[in-house]
Image (tube, rainbow, N blue to C red; front, side, top):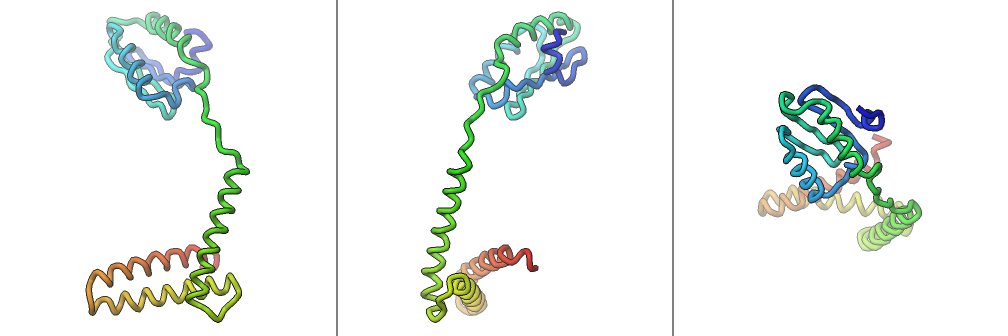
Length: 178
């Protein structure tokens, strides 16, 4: 087999060959189906499967009907059709991602400050007020959850889940200390 093609062959035994080619990475379903149908139409080919995530093509054939030289000729023919490298999607610039992250954090802090002003009106320090508000809301959810057992299971479930979510967030915030 040609040296330029050997680097893409991952395994080869009579009747079975696996090829991994960067040009097969991320191809569309329509292209994938077209390739499979075209290769399957070759007389003696018993199976074709593709994995576009890794760019893998598995080919099985009847070794009594198709020789290794025939497979090499088919591979030479198909190699000319496949681009060397699939076009990669352009990643989002890091500056845009960092800017969006900072904006989201700023918005979250602003909302938490508004809630803290209502729950803890006497405390003006931002971080301390947010922490105290979070703890008080968590305590309220726990008490309402326990009292909800006497009233309705729905009340108990709603406040129980809200308490569990707040507790999970609290533990996440203090993961280095715990």
